[in-house]
Amino acid sequence: RDAVLLAAWAELEPEAGKAIADRQGDPLATRPMAGLALGALPGAHWSALAPEGALRANGLIALGRAERTAERSLALPEAVLLFLLGAPGLSEELAALCRRADPPDAAAMTPARQRLRDDISAAAAANTGAALQLCGPDPAGKLVAAAAACPTLFVMPGGALPQAPGDAERLARIWRRDLVLTDGALLLEAEDAEARPLGAFAEAMTGPLLLTAPDAVPLRRRASMRFDMSPA
Image (cartoon, rainbow, N blue to C red; front, side, top):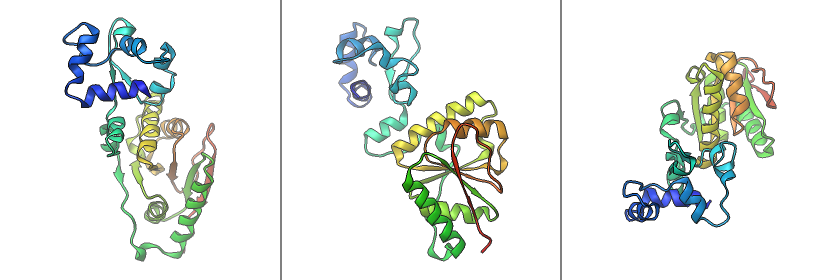
């Protein structure tokens, strides 16, 4: 937490840059370096800045480039900074790939959509971590039901997924962070997604995830729950 606050101070306070540069002995080094954070913050350890450590694995801190690890600067991703400012929002990369679903009108809630909404709400309340697979006909109806169940719902077309599994997993990690910060859920329109990047993404994105497709998407390493949209 202290490392995040130090990076936020550098981003937000006009006098922070000079104070940090003075402490680091370089007038151009206005962002805190890893060495400064580890030397100045109580209880700090190098493991906190490891790629698998909580700060970097969860996308809360980004490290700049430098030959020596101690000289790599700390920076806050945009979504983390927005959250700290009390205005949570998606990072620019994700915002370009998705849209936010509007709350549905009452007139759009047919009995079948109401039943699916209730199924989604019950599954979300159970908090099992399973992906929710919305199957059957009526893609628009499945979106309406999901938007009624999820107050903050982002919708991403399956065609927006990167083709390389490694890139899909990286995107999933960003979504996982941003959904926590926005208290949101992601609906992925899986009808037009390639199977390999879709599987890599869905299995790596451990946050709230809904998949829409005529039939269930096979997932090997993530539990899922299937809900079928009834025709009426």
